[in-house]
Length: 75
Image (cartoon, rainbow, N blue to C red; front, top):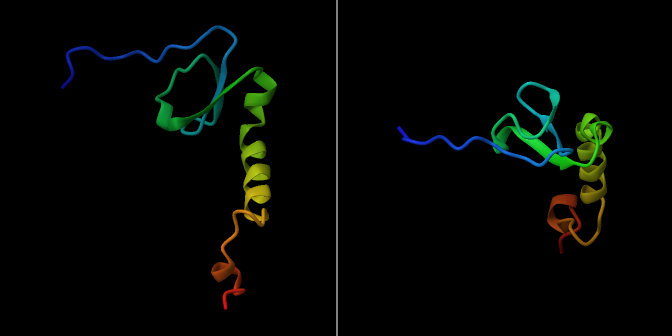
């Protein structure tokens, strides 16, 4: 057991989305492994999951990152 626990600290105005509690928080309240961010506004943090979905689709369809074998295009 650690003698000293590090408290997650953030800067005022930094917003995060907690994946475990599914809520927006100002400054990190939950551990880094459970949150997305920082975001510059509460609204951005509220849309974190939507933004992640959009970015995943872009990444999956980016020819620079796609694996030809996974698509069945391998020779």
